[in-house]
Image (cartoon, rainbow, N blue to C red; front, top):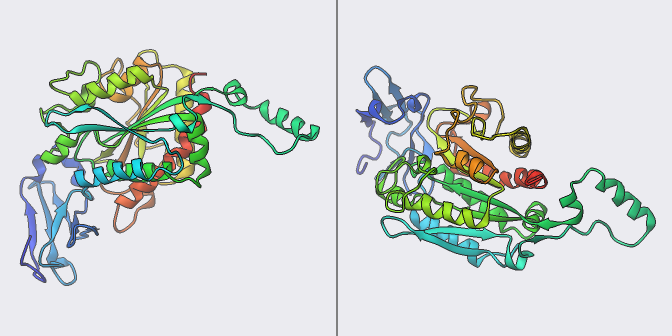
Length: 382
């Protein structure tokens, strides 16, 4: 809105009840910004379930409309320019690993490149993992101590071997911009040369990161689909190049590299939690992968209390036999651990704050994922 500075204006979205997820309006607070850099929630946001109207009432806000030009957003926006900046920072600012490579997996329907960042190969030890130096010196006492420590380690940790292959993708649903903010934190930590978790992770794993799966949908203003109207997270069983090229190209590259663990980052309109839905219910799902997934979730919750492992109770896993989503197709196709991470559009009710779930909290949650990945790396392929 423009030229309404100080006015007690009421903004009403009359057809909000016909949105894809009307339950998401309950307890929702709209984001606004006067400079498109700093975004805050409007506490007077309300939803009438009977009329289906969403209202932002500046008459209830101190000072009324806060500026001459005020922008509104469902969640803090993340533009294609910001995505390009992120990719450039990763490629040109790689200090923890000088061999961060930008791979163009293919093109979208609108002709945009599908960017993939590879961390942990090449100059970072190639595809082989060599165990970290266990101690300084040559004393027998130190050797005995190391031998005792190794009793609790896997064969891979003790002797080395092939690096584990990790895929992390985000924003299959373009309206879920918190996934891009999550990627900001995740990639920034991967570039930190003084972070011990990063150094150890890059020594043990190769990470393929697709920061933005659906740039066409984002540029077109879509909530869940690409340029052709495809919901990408329903196209993984048999992706068509003409209809869902994003999934086609990513899955083709996955076939080339293999996958040990995949994390698919999303936002959830209605649930007030950060949570993971895993591979339960997919054909061939086994106790070993279930245990690895459980450990991942527990470590993630320890690394960042915004993540939790209990709620929502109704999300037990995939419908039996479902292999059309990313997590289920990865679990079946590569005998791997595939997971979907969800963040709230509203807030994490367990650590609620006035401004709700934010871009910065998304980034912090992204950074914390490295702890969980490192913790389970030794369990993959075992």
